[in-house]
Image 1 (cartoon, rainbow, N blue to C red):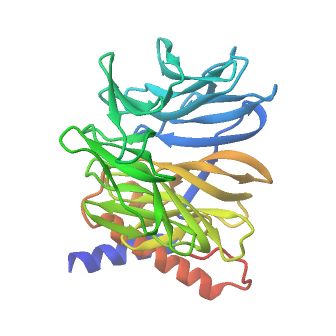
Image 2 (spheres, rainbow, N blue to C red):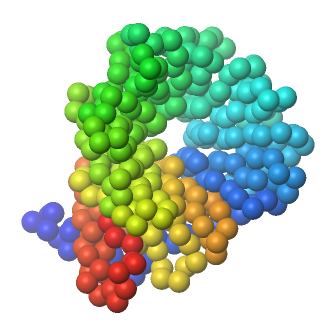
Length: 358
């Protein structure tokens, strides 16, 4: 009975108006910007093109978009931000990658030949320097490689210290998960022999992309020994980049039209095109979603009036906004069922076949 009541409440509320409001995060004077990750306080990091043509890392919060390397004459990229506002990323100097950490007191160079790709709330940094590494309290730990491989790089870490990334296996690549107890283990694939792991939540659920026997790539969700194919929005391939502690996944998928990808959100068996949940006439086409926090805010990149822009999505529904920051088990399921019902209703009332579909 509780489930029926909650489902009815979600469906009623969602049918009353637009699901998400969308915010343009701004620019650094150039023609493009990408929002890559968001922490639970709603602060976003990513990179944007400057007027001089360089890509610069940025942080966007209540004070607006801030260039993290305003005097730097080369490219910088911010990959993730933790709860305290520490940011991990990579700067390029004379064509050489340097792992970089930005904090309120300034930036720290981790050295040449290093990519910094993640940082958790304890300040543990991950990345790659030929091998995936973990940096804690000033000490580097080499996470190794998979059997028959010689290269690895980390891409995500949770608050328990579990790490995911990619490693070479013969002539191909496999996503991996590493813990202090098990070491590095492959996450598997979807029949095509390759995979890439991009994110992990605090329950140990891993997301990424894996190849099919057909040659296409599909977003996946892996938990323990089970890997789930998340499907697509009608096209051949899809890619997942982030998962929150409710199990909601974001990424992007090609459409049946094959013209351009669309950003998606997925939970409990339902993949939805985020464009179908925006106000009509918003001026946006959301093409990629890269980050989601535990409040359900989503960041990525899209076309705003034809220009590549970074976005942040916020729930525009009081029922969803009033839920706890980390929804209880089953809430995400109900929300996505409600969203699906709304999209179906819109599809039935559509007068044009070009409207985005889940």
